Image (cartoon, rainbow, N blue to C red; front, side, top):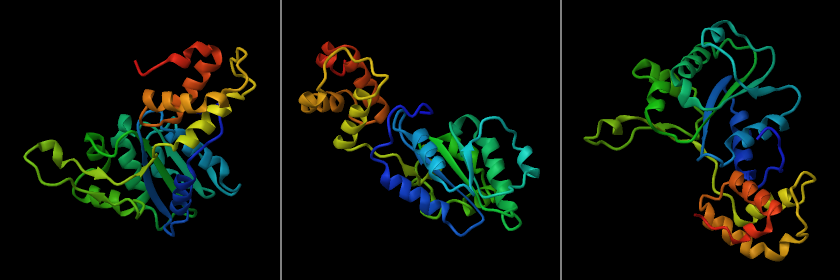
Length: 239
């Protein structure tokens, strides 16, 4: 996603929602963005970071420990993106609760965007904690996505809290085509001579929708790249 080979298509609604999240009046708040692999969560977060005004420091957090955040103080408005939250859910929960506990004394706004494939599962419990930890974690959650318990069940896993998240939705067919066209027309495309893919738009869209019903931009880009390299792949199917 960092190569930005294709422009971002079909994510205007998600970008507007993230802007509303950024404008929340609280000094510290967090939200989660979810969607299946290849749906463009990381790319969405990257583009949002890049479009922020210069006064904001924004980026992906890679190397850190929760203890480092106990003493960290922002020197400007800060947006932090954390990917693959389930791999370090407990530490991220400690960061959230630590920032929430200091929210009244933070000199600048801090926003935390969490990226994960699902808004439920054991990682959510590890992240939110229980009892007072749960109350502290959800106190700073973006108001449009409150935490809600699953309905009562005899299944012990049903007790795991499900987050209400900003979902990276399926792209429209036109957005998928825009994504594919940008790959076809890219200077780095492995083009073999077929100059007008638009002549095959209907067939190509039908193929990508059959190959990937979830309408993920990553799969559309892969498919377009493969077609550019070998027009015989026009006969591809899901298998």
